[in-house]
Length: 192
Image (cartoon, rainbow, N blue to C red; front, side, top):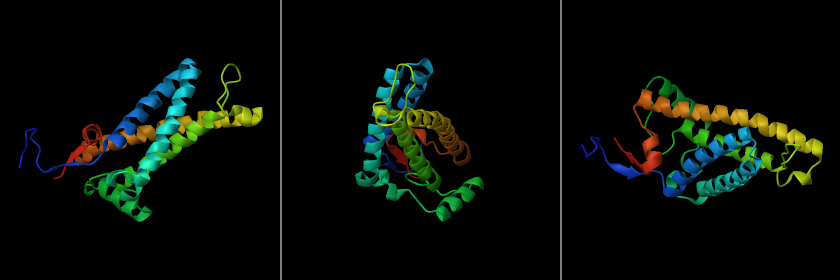
């Protein structure tokens, strides 16, 4: 049965408000962190990093106690399921999932992990001029310099992961004709 927007199938809630707010807040924070670092606005960068830690920790907790589709147990699958899904996707025969598919589930886990590690490294970082992370005083200057280097290197990996995430969403739109952005905005998804 077609509805008002021309779609067919029942509309169900898939992403709750906390998942959506955290997702889009992380998107905005990555942009703020990138721009503030480029512009040398390290006070803004540092505060945004602390917010990042809070959001990621909240999402990790919500992934354990939150609504069913938000829980990691509902979308983290073993290597066999991931490989099977990837092969089916490449052949254009991937099964639809209400929540994250096996590849998308692991992308969520990897992104959250990298974001948390990146933000924690920032706590110990220094620019050797005007800004030290709030925990930089707890380690030696050489350790702080090493952690700062890791922080900068991991940022490049984070950008690559974000790019891969966006490519995955676009691939779903093109190959599977499934819009994954709309449910992350509205919280609702149409079952075919």
